[in-house]
Image (cartoon, rainbow, N blue to C red; front, top):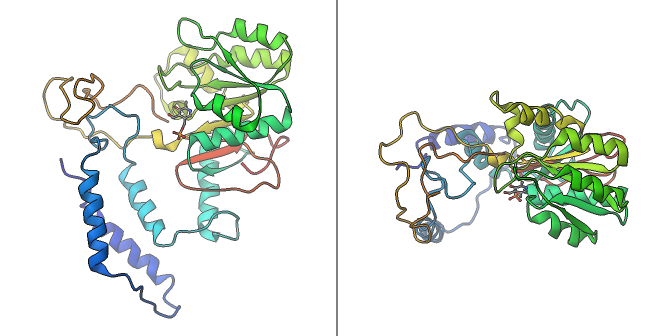
Length: 330
Ligand SMILES: Cc1ncc(COP(=O)(O)O)c(C=O)c1O
């Protein structure tokens, strides 16, 4: 297959436009040795050929897919500037763009008043959200289902918070009866509900968890890193739709834009849906190819922040907090 390189001229065109914005500055030249540069790129290109063909629409062995062409080009364009969004005055234009991006993500869940920011990934976003949770519920446990992303337990360890694993029901969703019993013991400060588990795409029963929140007053963090974007789909099962419609009730949400896939081409090569992979290590994996190149879920990232704490950014995930009373920057 061909890689999407035919759009490089568009990038070149936009670089010229970007350059014009700085035309009043004195000219400079870098001192990079182009032969050495070519040598390095040659080695990278050659070595990268041994990766799985993530970019092929028929490849489904890994959840990550290349970004949409517009995201790829926009990201490349931004690297010629490499702005510093650590503070609003550190990256004037790009911080404003970050705020717009986060507002658009918050809008997916009906949040008009929100605080959030972009992070390097879902794990960092969850870490920030649970850090806030730990500050608000000091010493109390974080509870997440046994199907929650494995990093929640590790994050709790890093933050020095006790972690409790909640068993799941037969549909791989958090068992709310067991959760209720645990909450009755009084040591759970935060519940992490997963909306789209990594393993099965299961959606924890948010309505029931929110009912329990009224009784027990815990903080509710939703890890929608993998499944969050399904809020946009129109064909969810009724109970799943109900959970998505309630996402705005959470105290914080993580959503990962990496999970949004580039469009699958209209015309796919014909052939059996499952064929063996020519790439090492996955020779017999049935997940290697499928007819649509899609996994059940794809997603974006968010977490919560407290006033005065720094923001960080890289255009992969987002972090925010839905309740202004609780925090601020996210
Ligand atoms: C439900 C869930 N949470 C968190 C993460 C971690 O996200 P990241 O890989 O962006 O750090 C993932 C990754 O697959 C996930 O599926």
